[in-house]
Image 1 (tube, rainbow, N blue to C red):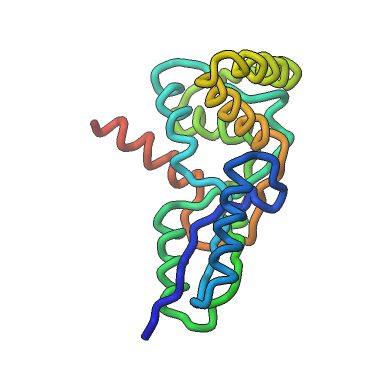
Image 2: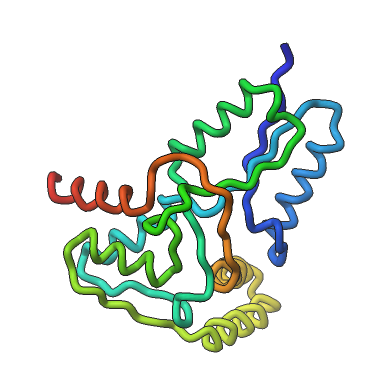
Length: 198
């Protein structure tokens, strides 16, 4: 039996603005027009994306958001739940030649904004929230400056694209149909517990 092609894409391709998103769409299209069966999975954010902020806050630093931190919502998914979904796509022939958009459980403790995510990290660590904001206008100004500098120093283009990604995710909702059982709250509490035991 010939197994289908399984592509891990991303929910952000629904509103493409960045080179990475157009590259993902190009790959999706190539798979769709091929002669093989396929399944394309577009997940929302992963839990591990928040781990860097968690580590910084555990070390006593403030949490950072862009603007108010309340513009965009998402229901992140664990790597275990995502892996389970993708394995099921391989095994179930009814899930072939389809595109799936998925996120983690659609529960109050797993539908968050950037600000709420930061607050949950402080809660998991038993600390008083310290949240600092970088204004959107300042971020877009820096993006424009690095874009100009990149005309003369091409390596700076990477910085521009990273900042554009941050900006994109701070203003676009990434809510997706829920799947799995693990929540962001569970993940953060697990990280806090591991830190105490280390």
